[in-house]
Length: 310
Image 1: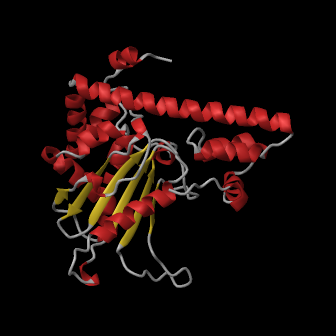
Image 2: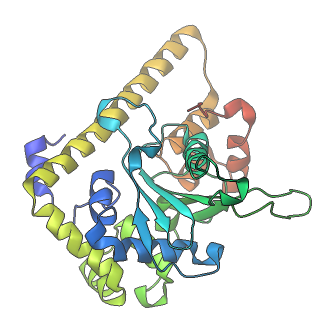
């Protein structure tokens, strides 16, 4: 494993990960770069809102604190749209097994605190969470999913006050590759986060979209600041330490299971690796010798669920 000093020296535009949440907040959470954030939000929310976003106001992210340990403290972007909706954007590279409930918790905090003393229920503001994930979480194949409150029998939506978006970057990364010129604005942003483009494609992506070009310029400013680089490296090391601890714990558990004659089965172990973001759904299905849709059904078995409470 590289040392911190080696990681610091080797960090550059090619190795830079825009899903490092310290870097994400630097690029998307600054007033002087709100036009980048506005463009990003508009790409993902236009279809849902049925109007373009014309302005945003940043809010204090401490509005919705959630107790976590040390280095893995949550960093995100909170803002209000000029049209009245509230938005919380979170980048999550670690599968902490609580994402479904976690995003509901953040949504509930936003929705609750939008009502001031003396106001009526009519004054409640719609709340939106956008979760950009470096792992696969949901059963659908598409990289973007939106959840709301709906009658399952009729499809009738109660209202638009609840919108939960999940952007699963690994699913986008394994889709058939498109030319930059053929991508929608939303796909271009996902390509930016996936960060798997060669130099020519990166240049083409920057030329095709002024906001993404601005995000790349902001990354250069970030990388030129030694303090920010160290913040980035420390965050990456915390993530590596966490993943290493999970791997060691899993291996110890398997050793204990073998000693005790207990096991969760091959499919169960592969499902854990998918939930932890180690394998994609397709990779796990292949290793299990199953069709992807059959493996997905096996994962949805309640006995295999590993969802924690927040």
